[in-house]
Image (cartoon, rainbow, N blue to C red; front, side, top):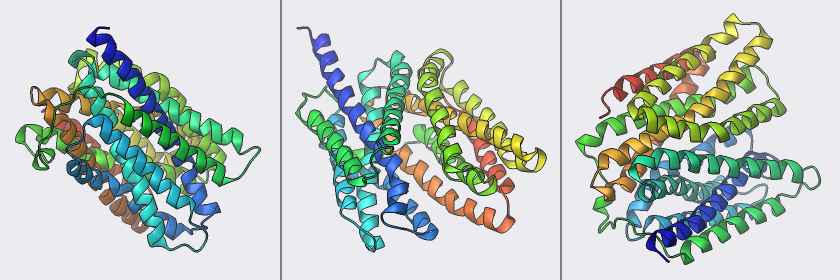
Length: 391
């Protein structure tokens, strides 16, 4: 057997394991809010607080990855999946009346595993794909992850027509995580650049400043979709869960086909042009988010904002350009790729958490979404201007 064939066979198993890990993550995300509401009976204030332990691991993942510097990317993925399984298992044991600190610890553990997995998947693709094909492979991998999430959502939708027991759902989640972790542990891993100390995992070089700056601004952009886009549909436009579910499903199905295409566009046109186009498109969406409720009739407002929501989700895939950009400018310093990706994730989450708080205060004190989306739109424009400095 040639070395190339052997590596391809190994990568097939690794990709299958990562698919299972993302399937478990998709199931976990679908069940999370309903479990907090229906089983633990959290109120709106408590549910809002749970976003802190859910998002904070995006920052913590950088430090955990640094502490585990002696593990290569595939083994790190295995540890991340085990953390997700562990957090999910202990969350299953909680019942109504459980302390918020206990719940926060469980959510933090599971979310930490999923955030480490997020960076590791990108890193594995960057290390194993040929440099000229990185964007194509990353687009295919993102589509695979989207497919896993859609399969998870479809399973829960069908299963809950016949059975409403969360215990069966979470048992499946844990089982999928464990199978994925075992595959990642037992496989002979491809060769990755070795990191010899903790210090090598914290990299702040001047040549990476543009990447880190764009990640900061896109952390603000992320909240426009994840928090304020949802809140605009639910709170301002009074859309029911069935309508929200339909919109999310549509965006997922479209993304399944568009993500590989975006990967091809990054290869064809380059990271700079794609990132600038992303900023221009998002600026238009921010204007529609901000002014559609005041300008359009109610029915057309729902249509316009719903379309923006779908496009917003699809445009998230253009973030692949940032990943392939940092992998490219690392050049011969391949050992910088994984730490830089995790540093970008950490910076992104700090900005996202901060704007989640600031945007909520702006919305509450102005009584509407305009200033929230216009401020976020300025960050998007800033990301586009900064992208002009990409090499």
